[in-house]
Image (tube, rainbow, N blue to C red; front, side):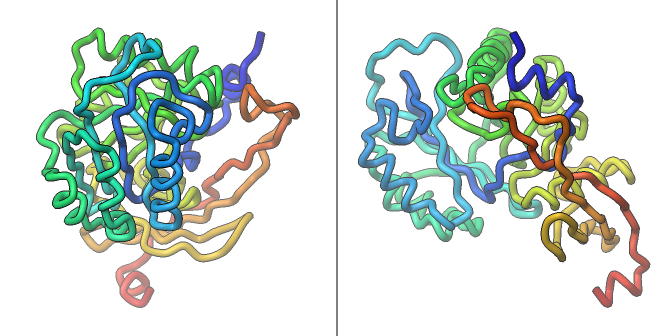
Amino acid sequence: MSTCSSDSRELDEPLAGTAATARTWLLLEQPGPWGAKALTSSHLDPVLGRALEAAAKDTGVRVALIRRPGRHADRGMSTARQVYAAHTTPGNAWLRSATLCDPRKLLDVDFAALGQGDPRTFDTALRAGPHTGDPLALVCTNGKRDRCCALLGRPLAAELDALGMDGIWEVTHLGGHRFSPTLLVLPYGYAYGRAEAHAVKEVLSRVREGRIVVEGCRGNSAWERPGQAAELAVRAAVGEYAADALGVVRTIGAAPRWTVTVAHTDGRQWHVVVAQETAAPPRAESCGASVLGSPARMDVVAVRELSVASALAG
C-alpha cells in the first residue's frame, strides 16, 4: 500500500525549499504519547501548551516537544526536563540549553526577543547557557500527525541512538510528512528529508566543522521557502558549504515568481530567480488527507552572480 512518502519518493519530488520556517526553535522535553497537536495533546498541561502557542505567535519562534528515542509508555517523567533554544540566522546562529523542573518558567521568556536572536531572557529565566555538547539531530516521529513519521522516523531515531550518537531526539512536528524521515539539525537550522543513518552521520560530522551538506537538504528554517531554495542553489553552484557564509538579504516578488538576493560574507552577491510550480500529478500530501493535492514546489530558474558595482548599488 502506498503512503504519502512513498508517492513523493517515486515521483522524485524535489526537497529544496520545503523546510518549516522559524528563526528560533524552542524545544521542551516531554516524554509519553503525543497527539496531532502535541502542545495541547500530550502529558504537558494543555493550558500551558496554549499559552506557549500564544506567546510564540508572530515572533519567529516555533515551539516543539522532544523526547529521547525508544519506547514511550503512557507514564509520567522525572521532575527535571531538558529545554533548548536555537537561533538559526547565519552569522548569529546559536544553541543554548537548560534543565528546568517547572515548564511554566518558559512563559517568563521574551519570545519576541528570542525570535530576533536575543537569548538574554531565556538565559536569566531558566539559568541557561551555551550548549557545549554535540549538535542536535531532531527526527520527526509523531505518528498522530502522519503515520510515515512513525513508520520511518522512529526507526531512524532508534538506529542513530543505537550507533551511540549524542544529540539525537525525537520531535513532534517538522512539516513535510511526505519527505519522511525528516530531521532538523541545530544550531544551523538546516532540515533534511528522506534521511538515512549514514547520511545523518555525515551531516552531523560536517556541522561539527561548521559546514553543511547540500544533498538531501530541504533548506534553512531562517528563510522563507523561495530563500531556502535560492541559498541551496548558490551553494551547489559555487561549492560553498561553510554554514555561516551565505545569507538571504532580499526577496522581491510574490508567488509564483521571486528574485532572491543571496550574499556571501566575502561581498559576492547573486540574483536567484525562483518560480513556484504545481507538482504533478496530484498525490497525497499527507497520509491522513481525504483528497489528493498538488503541492507547491520551488524551482530555481536562474542563478546570476552580480558584478561588484551591481552588488554595491543593490
